[in-house]
Structures are given as structure tokens and as C-alpha cells.
Amino acid sequence: MAKKKPVEGEKRAFLTGNEAVAWAALVAGAEIMYGYPITPQNQVMHTWARIIPPFDRKFLQTEDEISAGFATCGGVLAGVKAFTATAGPGNVLMQEPQSMAEAMRIPAVFIIQQRGGPSSGTVIYSQQETTLTTYGGNGEGWRIVYSVGNHQEMYDYIIKAFNVAWKYRFPTYVMGDGYQAELREGLTMYDPEERGIEMIESEPIVGRPGVPGVDRPPAHLVNIYSLEEELYEVCMKYQAEYDKIAKEVKECETFETDTAEILVIGHGAVFRSVKEAVFNMRDKGINVGYFRPVTLKPLDVEKLRECVEKAKVVLVAESSLGQLYRQIRDACYGLTTPIRGLFMPAMGIVSHDIENEVQKILNE
Amino acid sequence: MSAKMKIGKKVPPMPESWYEPSKPHLFCPGCGYGIMFKALGQVVDELNIRDRVVYGIDIGCSLLSYNFFNFDTIQTHHGRTTPVIYGVRRADPSRICIGVFGDGGGYAIGSQHLVNACVRNEKVFCILMNNTVYGMTGGQMAPTTMPDQITATTPYGKKVEEFGWPMQGPETIAAIGGDGVYAARAIVSNFRQLKKMIEKGIRNIMDNRGFSFLEVLSLCPTNWRTNAKETWDYVNNVMTKYFKVGEIKVPEELKEV
Image (cartoon, rainbow over all chains, first blue to last red; front, top):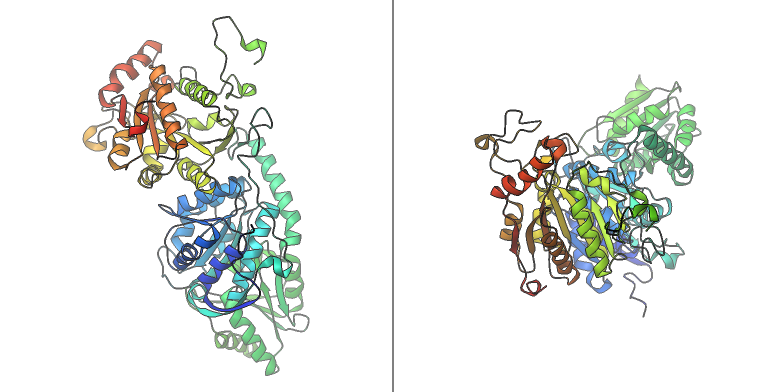
């Protein structure tokens, strides 16, 4: 008998972002979550542990984020959709298993709810895990990172993350922040298959059917190599594969970039304010537009350069001292448009912060 | 089994669970790992569980067994074998998860995983090779290093007042483990006992009873800088002064095995 679906039909709900994460993972077919308490992602675990019994899913609270990450890798290798969630110093500890996931192409899903940093920082909000989440680990950043801006996106992109991870076999991230984690707002919950979204099946990577050495070769999975040349070949192969899939994976959102003299860039929760500010200023007849990266890794460099080239000034607004800014600047190397920053580490940015900054630029 | 491996009539066959193309193996001459692998291979053959085993290994000497066996193998990070294999077991309880690592991986960098896997009674079997040093990284002091032992990081001998006594692993596991935990210490010079303990450790997790832990007193002539005689003397007569060989915690049901 088919198991009861967690969500039937389209359902309006009023949830926190963390609750939306748990429900989205449930409808996406996640079988197990491994997690360790850290604010502001705790409620993901609380919600998951509370809602799973009728649906025969599992939860394990581990001894730290290192083990939560490695156990997630183990669960994925066993052949199920597995995920974990963390934040701040937990995200730092979890870079070790995340690095293994990159090296062994383990399609684990990581939910990051950013908090203040460095160190313990605050438990509240920030965008200071952008560099860590996109490029953390002792590697090259073979990760797919979505930065979401509201609860509907949180829900939609978690469903997408499981599919993207299992399709391309790169670790996949959905990054929010403490504001989004704890804020309650409306969203529509749905079963992805009822909407015609095809869910990709997971499959065992160890423990495939048959006797190893008789019916199939044994799986000997490694992340260490004897020679520089061996690792070089692996790196070049993975990079080529990443570059290839980047074209299909990259996502961005733009508005009035053809006519904008001032192009505002922001991601995640800050994008809400960017959008509001740009709409307000357009109403006042100011020539502004926005570029919003949805995937921070891979970044849609082509579209970004096209937008930046047309603008007279670019303003990057973010709740850090330039973590997205540095990615934007790298991607725009060779273009002459000045790129400015509105940097408010650990602070929320509201629309009038951005409008004031644009006004300053106009007054110069 | 190829003919070339049958050097003489008296050479026993390799266990079926060994992956023949990877032989001769990568471990140093005189290393104790091969003895434990022989016992492990034979037990997996006898229990006929090759298709269910997921074998996890650390960084450190154990990683050299990444293609040693004819069963599914995951090479993890230093100290992280335990969480990877309990992650596998939690996701798919039909798997028989066996982790192998050294005293550094188990008692130093991965000690929190070992302790908590025991406390939660994870149904996995961890085998820890105790050779009193970090082997692969060049013979540094381990939590198991003996008093006055010379290592790369204690060139004048390990001072107990500075660095403490050798870690008592299976005793710790027995002390913190609840019902169903199996904890024992074997020695590579007693093959029959070693094999029996491996069998009990595996049976304990197959019966879904509890966490299994086996420390194996092993050999490292490379880092001990000992000849064959001195090597065996060290493991049999010096190490056993601090590390008592035997079963420390045995679930009732396993006592008859």
C-alpha cells in the first residue's frame, strides 16, 4: 500500500522558516536527518522529529556537527536521501564532512541558517557564512549553493536541492539565516509530484544488490590518493563536470537591468530589501535595477557581467563586510563599472538603508 | 584463487573475503594488521555475510586496506570512521558495519565518536589497532604510548607525570556502555582468541544487541625500530603489563558463542 503523502493538494500554511525546511524535506522524500543542536537551526530538528512518525522517517541527534555531517555522508552512501542542518560555528565544524562530500561526490543536502560571526558571534542573524558555505573546506568549492529569500523559496528550493544533489552528485546547500529561520510567514505547501515535479530516486552507493566479487565488483570508495598526478586527474575531471553542470544549475533574478544606471545586488534576506528599495526608487523616477544571485555557487557570471556592464555604478548590499562583494568583483574582472558596497555585518538591512546609499551615489 | 598464490602445500588459502588483485598488500613488513585482517576475513567468510558488510576505515595505517577486502569499503577521515558507519547503519539497518582504525583515530581525534556511539549503543563494530604510536604519520605519541616510550614527539621518553598513563579503551567502553555492549581486548599473538572476539563482535551487531568494541594489541616494528624478536617481546611482555588481554564486557547471550 502506498504510504500516505505528508501534504495533499495545495495547502496554505503559516510557518517559521525552520518548519518550512522540515516539511519540504519530508515532501522531497528525505529518509533521515542527522543533526546537532545549534541556534538558529534547532527548530528544523524539533519539527522533523515531531512530524516524521506517521511517515516512517528517521532522526539521529549526533554528538557534534562533525559527526552529523559524516553520518549524513554515511546515510547517503547507504542509498537514502539524507540531510543535516547547521549554523555558525557548527558550519565551521561541518566543513570537514562537507569536504569529504565534495571529494567523493556524495549528494548530501546541507541546510545553513546563518548566524553572526566570527566565533560564536550572535545567535540571531548574519550573512557571514557566504564564503564558508560556497568555498569552505580544503578544496575547490564543488558545491551547489542556493541562497533563499523567503519561506516559499525555502520550501521550493529544498525540494529542488534533493533533486539537484542526486542528479549531479555534488553536495547541495540551501542557505537562509536566523531571521528567515525564526520568522513566521505564509507559504503554499504542496506535494512536488502533484505539481508535476519529477523526484529523482536515490540509490545505494555501498550495499548494492549481489555479492561483491561474485555478482559485482566491491565498492572501494576513497578520498585519498598516493600520487599528485592521481589527484590532479580527479580534480580536473570534477572541475570539468562542475563547469558543465553549472550552465544548467545557475540561477539569478534581474529587474530593469537594461535601463538601470545603478544596479543593486543582494542575496538571501537582504534581497527582500533590495527589491523593495528598487521598486520605491523606480516609483520616484530613479533609474535603478537589481541583480539577485539565487545560486551563489555556481554564480551566473555571464548574466552578471552583462548587467554590470550596462550600469554606471553597482552597489552590493550585504550583512557582511563584503563576502558576496568579493565574488562579484572576481566575476566582473576586467569590467570598468565601479562596484561599491553597503556592508552591515551581522545587521539586518532595510530598504531605506539601500535607498539612502543610492541617494548618496546620486549626490556625488 | 590463482595458482601463483599457492606457493606450497602448507600455505593456507586466502579468505574469500580478501580482494586478491590488491595482494601483496600495502602494509609494512612485520605489521600486525595482516593478522587481524586474516581473522576478520575468515569470520566474514564463515558467517557468509560478505554481501551485507560495509567496511569503514580511517586516515592512518588502516586506510591502506581501502582495497584489501572483497566487500564494500568507505575510506573516511582521521577519526571519522565511527560516524560514517553508524550513519550507514542508521539509514540501512540491514548492513553489517565494521570500522577499523588506530589508537590515534579512536582514542584521540575520534574519541567523542567512540564514546557516544557506545553511549547510544549504535549497532556497529569498531576494531581499534593499538600499537602505542601513530604509525603512518611517523611514530608520534598516541594516547596509548607506554611510560618512558621513545616516540617522534617524546624523543626523551614519555613522562607519565606530563602525559598520563596509557589509555584504557575497552575498560572505558565497558564502564560507560549499557546492556548489549561487547568490549574486549585481543592480541595479534593469540590468533584463535582474536578470531573468536571478532566473531562475537560481529554476532553482537548482527543480533541487533548493541555496540561492539575490540582493541587489538598490534605490532609496529617500523616505528618501534625493533627487530622481530624485540617486536614480539614488546607486544607480549611489555604492552600486556598495561593492557590486559581478555573480554571485559560480554552480553549474556554471547557467553555461549
